[in-house]
Image 1 (cartoon, rainbow, N blue to C red):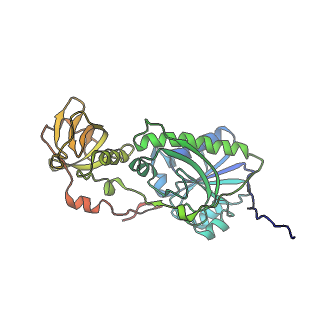
Image 2 (cartoon, rainbow, N blue to C red):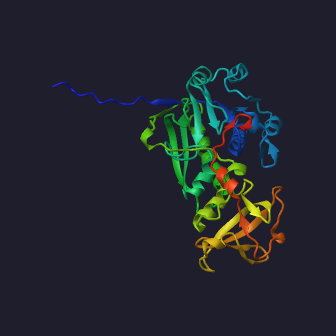
Image 3 (tube, rainbow, N blue to C red):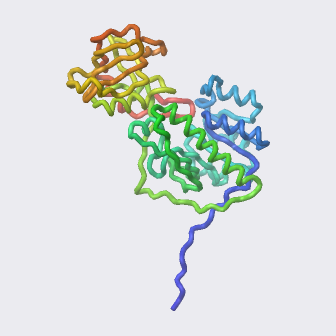
Length: 346
């Protein structure tokens, strides 16, 4: 009887690397740049106009790259000849996308990056593809965090998974800023450890193909467009929604006395009992530092009330005032927003 042959998946050779090429922007990119310089690791950056002008802890990304003398290029198109020339020979280069603003076409991935362009994704794949990650996690009460390194293949977060790790966000994480700070620490350790293991030596990895029937996708969000508060929701939905657009964003938005305002730093209050839906949005108590507001099912404690310039409007609020959101704003709240290399598309 003829022996049966078991089909085995080919192994993927990761490394050796002595050069780091980062694509995108954000705090993690900055931290990896600092690590690379400190550890005598060659570092280059390709960024978009949108990311180049972002402030990261008080300094614009482009200025940071210039002050640190890090070779970089700012481009609207990842397929441009200028980018191709800048990338050059990359046989020993770890090419990593960190929230990059471009759509990578298969031809660019092959011709410019030799089919070894990686992306770092912060949630479980193939579930939770797309953007707006921390806000969606807060809305769905998801505390699972991931460090997922996968190949970019031209789809949206669809390439084979090369390496991954899983962690839990602590219970103290309530707003996107908390999630982001913890995510950066976890993924910084994940990437630097991998680079240390593959410096001048290779590592054989068995790629994991993503099962498409498990896939879900969540689009990007935009505070000004999507963060309007619907006061008819119950207290749990309201708390999660307001937390989802808290710092570093401007805050979920509504109206008070005909003025548009933003709310931050909220928590649920069961002490004062339940309220009727008609009472939703009414300020029923005011302390020195917080407001108590009626919502469906319980009270909502609000500590920060800001205008569009970020100025504190707490002192102007009186007991009996009501937060409300006009119907026309709620009609548009679920409109999809699209970003490109230069920013929000209109």
